Amino acid sequence: MAERRGANRAWVIVILMMLAAVFAVMFALDVFGVPRPSGRDASGEAALTETGLSARFDSSANTLAAASPSGLYAVTKDGVRLFDHSLTETRAAAFNLTDPEITIRGDVAGIWEYEGRAAFVFTPDGILRRIDCSDPIINMSVGANGSAAVITRAGAGYRLSATDKAGNELKRGVFDKGNKYPTGAALSPDGKWLAVAFLDIVGARMNASLAFTRLDSGASFEYADSVAASLGSNPDEIIADTRFSPDGGALYAATDKRLFRVDMDAPSAEKWSYSFGGEVSAFAFDGDYGAAAAVGGKVAYISLETGGELWNAEVSERKAVTFLSADGGVVAGADGMFAAFARDGAELWRWSAAGGNAALYFFGNTARAVVVDKEEARVLEAGNKKE
Image (cartoon, rainbow, N blue to C red):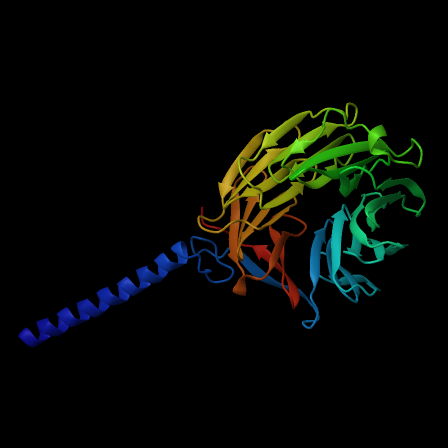
C-alpha cells in the first residue's frame, strides 16, 4: 500500500510538472510575443481558414504586393501581374526596374523606381502609359482618374510634372531656389486640384508645408502663387501621405504626428486637426470614411468627416504596429501578428504569419483576407468565432 501511495504521489508530481510546463509555454506566448499557431485567434478559436485559392510567385525575385478594389497587384523587377479576388491572373506587363515601388489610388497603380528614369501608370486593363524622365525620379503619385504626378531631381533642385490620363501635361514646376523641396503630391479625382507636400529646411530644423494649385490655372506652378498661406510651415513635421476624397471636395494630409483636413472650397485653412499623441509608425486611409494610425502597439481610428476619434484598440502589448491596411475596416500587424477590426471597432479576428514575413489585406470584404509573402498569395476566410 505504501508503495502504491508512493507511486501515486510520483504521478501527481509528474502531472503537476507537465501542467507547469504548459503554463510556462502559454506565458511565453503572451509575454515574449512568440507567434501562436497560424490561423488561430487569441482564444484558440479558428478565425481564418484556407479557401484553396492561391497564386504562386517567383521565389527568386522579391515580390511587392498591394491590394486594390479590383484585386491584387504583384510587382517584381521584371514586371507586374494583376489578380482578381479569386487570385486568377487577369493582366500582366513586363518592364525592367531594379527596385520597383508602387502607389495606388482606386484601381490605378503607379509603378516607379527611386532614382530611376521610367514610371508606369497601370490599370486593371493593363499599362495605361509609360512616363520617361530625363532626371532621376524621387516620387510618383497617381489619381483615381488615371492622372499622374512625377517629382524628379534636377541638379541642385527639383522638378514636378503632372499629366492627365492621356499623358497631356497639366502642370509643371521647378524648385531650385530657397529651402523648399517637394516630397509628394496628390491629384484630385475630379481633375481640378494638385496638392504638393514640401519639406522646408530652416537651419537645423525640418518643417512641413502644403501647397495647392488649380490644374486649369495654367501650366506653370510656383509655390508663391499657390494657396498655402494659412497652412504655413508646421515645425518638426513631415507630411507622409496626402489624398483627396473620392469627390475631390476635401484633402486629407497625414504627418508623423497628426492628421488634418482641408476643404477645397476654402483651401487656405485647415477644417480640423487631430493629434495622435505620439509618433505614428503606420498609417492607412479607409476610403472616404476614416483613417487608422498606429502609435506603439495601439491603433486609433479617426472620422474623416469630423476629425474625432471613433475608437482605439490594442494590437500588441510589446510590439510596435508596423503594418496597417484599411478597406471597410482595419488590419493591423505587429511582427507577423495581425488583428482585424470592423469600422465600429469590433475585433473580427487575429492571425499569425509563420516566420512573421507577410502582409495581410481585406479582400473584397472583411470576411475574406489575402495573405502575401515572398512565394505566394492565399485567400483566407473568416470562420465562426466564439463570442
